[in-house]
Length: 307
Image (cartoon, rainbow, N blue to C red; front, side, top):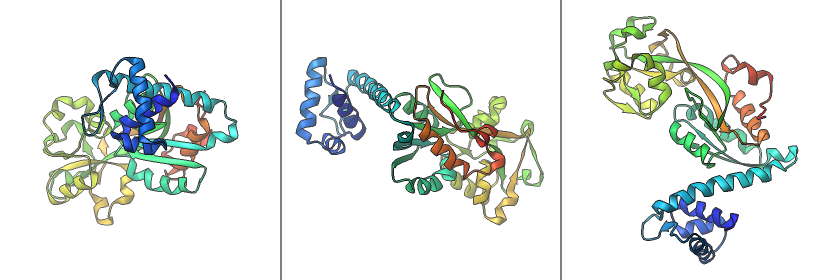
């Protein structure tokens, strides 16, 4: 078994196709297939079901794929830890953003990272639970999201805090209130972000018995929810950073909650991640996007240290 064979296993699992995996690895398909066959013979098992389209790992092969990701990640970590400090700001960054965070960071980050030709920057929009999984399996270098509780194996670097606000329809009775009491909130009129912890559970965690009755409609797309609110009754939740994207006539539809609710947005890496220089590049870029009053005071004053 070689590290190269494990990299081929990961490539096939990621691409679901032997030809595409071979192209990504810059080898011929016959070479890739031959190397994988030798590995399967050594392990006395089939790693991939070649009859499925796309190609998928077998039940036992999935555990090989998962372990291969960890082994390759640790091998790269060992190599990277031997690099000089000056070279730690080169290479590849694979980073994922939660859907309710990506719109406010990713466009400017892509622009800023394009000015650093020594870096290969890969950004994706991924649900929070998948970010955690992909970090733990070594598929990602970093994840940017809001996680309410510590996750074993991950290191959290707080970046900024923002208030969560209600966006209320002019047709809704709540529109006449300057701030809205969570204790008396009519949860059956909530239009909710789907499967995004910080936008529902974080706000309504203490009112779960009420939250169980909603929503009438859920979406992963905040602009869709805002349009629904504009044309109907009810309300939705939006982050403070979205205020800059609202039309002037819609700014007056936002209301603070009582008690006030906020979320902490952080960068997460594996506890054994060593590329401190790359983390600081991303942190510095985000610091140029987020208003200083929202930034975590520690990163304003000090660079990130992973150890």
